[in-house]
Length: 153
Image (cartoon, rainbow, N blue to C red; front, side, top):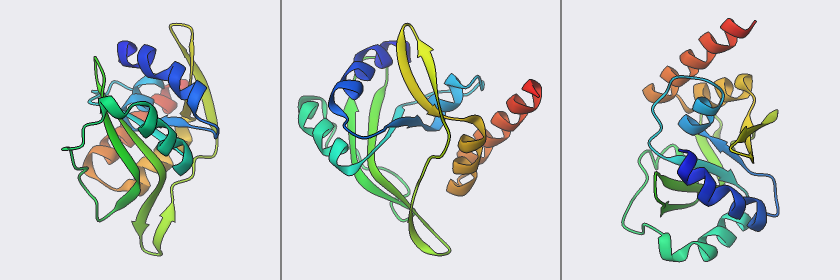
């Protein structure tokens, strides 16, 4: 994960005009949860997703289709980097009981990874978002984060 962060975080700081944050397994791992990280999920605005798609076009994995398209929509692109793939979700929305709603992150904390400032949702925000996603893998991550936050209290 450090290898891919070293490759992408400087570009995210340089090319994103709006706030961005990691979400998913990488954010949970950076918060201290013992989770496997299969990719780096980056939540951005739509315009920043477009900028990154232009910047990283030679790395884009155009053949890959995201699962759960019936529950999630965004300006999505997956990129192949050494270490892990990077998935950019611009303007991510979740389909729930009230239809399509934007995924919003409230409290964000910055973690230092080898001298890089990496924004992730605060633990309580990660738990809220993961529970709203409702998939089994997200529920498992939320449980791990709850136990982690319980250890810290």
